[in-house]
Length: 418
Image (cartoon, rainbow, N blue to C red):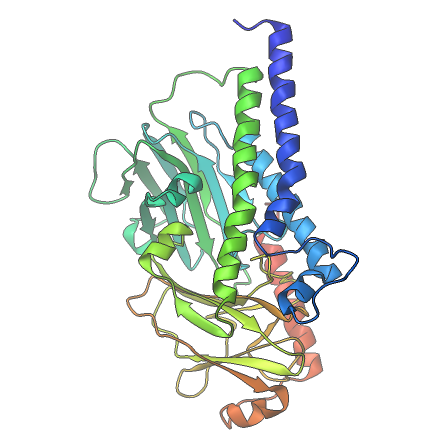
């Protein structure tokens, strides 16, 4: 048994190591090119556009907020969501927690699991358009060559009772339905719920329990628990910023395009199971727009998002930066004409860049057998009218204001009490 002074020293050392990681976090972004160190006395190279963007005060300010959000996620994962014997599903992303191309239409929940154990996930379905769950390995292990996703289920693979109740078993003896295998190095369960533009959002009620856990309540928090929690937080914060900075650099190398992720790429980024994601990047002048045209397939849910250089969605309560199957207006042939630009173009299907000259794009088709590839082209804003179908209506300032108010209400209702 550890002596009190040894326990105190152990926790102090773990805390100081965590503080060192926190202190180094901005440097990780600088090294990966998503932000830049302040220029020396000679000033930045005026020919280096990316350096000029990186030095934008707003971009740097939001970068530090991004690190603060990651810090909160890291600590909560370590201290509140790291007990695989007594798991509980946390709300891992939302309006104030964003990472890796988060979807404003989605509620994200996750918890720690032990891949050698057996679990029961149960509850009521709610009214999300699409639900998926995935059993994942640690992202660092996945980056070393192992598949990130061990197993997954989507809405059409889950049997629900007539009142929406369901039960899914994880690990143990195989079952034909409502079962997910585990692997010895599985470490996390992720549940995603995607909503359209619902006035009455009803998130699923979810409970999880370990079936082979030691009986009784968890032991009191001890020095080893603190050390372990801070170690998990350090691993998360020391890895995630650089990982997503590299992914942003990857998409930024081909601006104003949307391309499907390869199966290998989907594994690396732990992409949504049951979906076919297209990633891309926009880079636009103030008087330009990116016109994205595609015919959505028959699917449970789809959405298109334009986000910031931090791989976050903008504040969707105030910026209409995403479109889903309920919000979009299609032409008479069922085709979407989405417009990415910094100021209101006066047409439907506007994706507001929130003032950014560049950022990422993400198109999701969920629970579908086809994945049509969008056509992307950059146009001067004053040429948009001639590029759109003749029947495209104009959107007045009053209509846009009502649209913004409606989006704020829908988002606030969806996340109310979470």
